[in-house]
Each structure stands twice: as structure tokens, then as C-alpha cells.
Length: 83
Image (cartoon, rainbow, N blue to C red; front, side, top):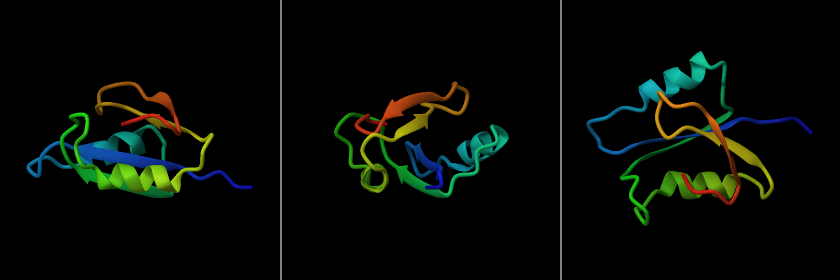
């Protein structure tokens, strides 16, 4: 079984760009096989279809890595975690 890498990138407004986040993961040597994105508030309960699709794509038991911002360190999250 081969390992795949998945990324979830989110910005809060349409005036922001996920390019900085793409650049940050590339600089960390991460080349995701699949990227999910949202332009949505980080507020709990906000509509984030990219996150929903990402969670549907990942299998239960997989650990993903996330960073709340491009200047933060990556940290592990379980499949059941929230963005």
C-alpha cells in the first residue's frame, strides 16, 4: 500500500489567497497528492465544503497534519479532528 499526502488549506475571506499556504507546505518539502480548499470563516459551525470533502476522502485512523497558520508549526490531528 502506498502512502498519499493530503492537504487542507483555508482562508477566511475572498481577499486572501491560499498561495502563501501552498508555498509554506512546499518549503517544508510536502508535495500533497490531493489538496482541499475553502474560503470560509474559521468560526465553529461555518460551512466548509472543502473540509467535509477532505474528511470524506481520508479513511478512519489516518493521521493528518495541520497548521492553523503558515507561521505555525505543523501538528498532528486524528481523522476525527476539526480544522
